[in-house]
Image (cartoon, rainbow, N blue to C red; front, side, top):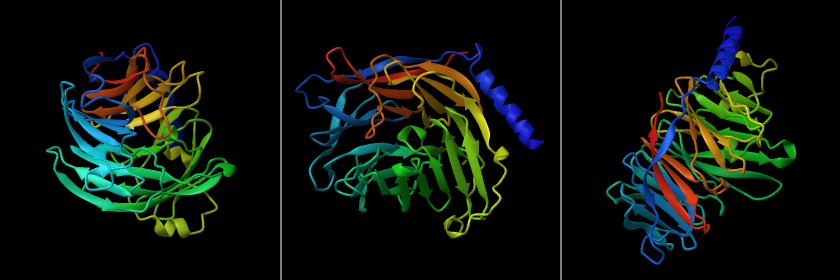
Length: 363
């Protein structure tokens, strides 16, 4: 009975989410970050952006590596991280905000640097990661995840998890392209296996601690808890699904032999189906307000629009302004902060600039 109810809810939510009743939200340009060429804040090869709740923006660049800060009017404030190997320096800077704290991940120096909103250096920590890194992302509870793969046909990868108090937890990934792009995520709370794995199909958490999984094709995930319960999750193509939170240790479960009978997959609720005939990828971002922003591709392969999910339903559809940079393995060219979204664009001369938009919610 429960399984039938969940399926019914899934169908109702999916159909309602894309009916004509879904309001169109819009992004209203608040200010642009477009410093003059040759000025101290001139933008070069952007590696990432991070926007605060108040509309200030951090910009990470490469060649040379640095992180700059711009105020809520788009004016250059200071260089936060400079090129180098000393304190407050980096060889490659990947950034993400943890509340009001800027966290800089340097995979080449194997270092995490945390800087407060007053520009005060909170701490710098060394950890062993590889020389190439994925961008970091934040879960809704303030936990940060940074990955760093090793190249090869089938390879292992290391990662680090930064808790809100700054404490580090190590994670282990396994990514094997020969075996249907298999993934493993091992932490104190979860073990997740799945395929395919890509930056677009990653897992995250919502504010209730539930696991959010995004399907980018025929996806099959296995979630193990510390109580040796196993749940197989087969996701619809291009869908967003949730599973109940499990907060027990997983170390024993991972080493234990898997039970022959898997848990009822009916416990998984697909809350939104994203129909499209375009390339089968989507993105999932959980904003500081707890909204799920589910990305859909545009005709050029870049992000074309977002469906915003609030309270288990599609609350709004957000077209993306033109000339947004396509997401790359090393970066995601947008960032959420309160009522703001920062997006990296290219102008007619292919020069980068950053638009800081206010989210205008339709009714």
